[in-house]
Length: 490
Image (cartoon, rainbow, N blue to C red; front, side):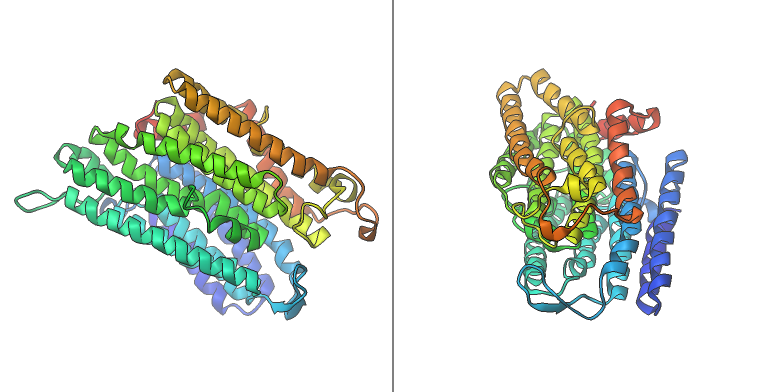
């Protein structure tokens, strides 16, 4: 079943390129998402047998990120049914610049969406550093056409920026893999395979200086794809110009894939007894990312870019949690779950707002609660969740990281973390509350009902995050702890 997790969406993607009927292609998209979720659920009950000599295996850390990807993809696939139906074939006018453009063919969009699922799945189950690198690069190639779905100048610019900066990052990660190979080579010949389990089992034989150099390059390389500041500059454009369901996957699933790549090398460093080497770097990247996000969120004029900078903030929180170690690592893994589901919810609701108001301007969107009450409630709930308000799961995971900072004696870090969270809360509140309240523009007409497919996926994701704040299922708690221990936490 390990191979099937990758091959089924890949085969479905190929089929989408030759299927001529939109309805059949959309049905295949949802059917594949359901099949993928079913296989992922089966992996929770019994871990599948490793494949390709142990290069592919589902461990605790990979299972957490695989599950996030699968759940988020199903929500996005269901949302896509309504979204693709609303997107016209042929020329249309760009609501921002008034120029005419055409969308990419739906077959290309659906096929790339399924390839994106296959490549992200490959990242989560890759145990070999070389294969992991290939999988991360493949996610870039599969997702670039999705960002360029609306074929106008802004999406083209965003796609090129995404490809260029992520290519620089992936090149550094490749160099990191070369350094890791040197670190795993014995002076008299022979070497340790670049499989995580083998490297951890023989960590005492690794050349520590080369391993440290490999860690630095992989942290910066995959950190670029993860959106850590100051390497984050591709992220706001790509998230802003993509269709909202693609933005949900980029923010909620793709960033996690790069994070997992960093966690894999941290696993090896922990086994080699140098886990403390990277901690200061993790903490520094975490706080800098949160600070950059705070600066750009305050007075932000584009609500999709606001969500994109919020992603930079939360990648910073994940990095900070790993850097603190101990319970902080558990908090980081738990926060990855909460952030992904919440951000998926918010981007899907942002797509609803874009459909109704035909603008991304925070100044021109008013009276959401009056005009589209259901989306309005989800928008406000999503804001409360993403800013860590109780009783959502994000509050719990952010609190665990804060407690870990105090427990470890990082008082200045903890205070800075609190100040940045408070600043971002205030900045987002000023924007979101103005959008939600007030009187809707007169040209929008009376209050209207929205399609269920535009609401149910987002509502389900929000309900899940709310549940995680009130009750953590034992099976999930055990796996999160197992993943944290595997990464050197507690």
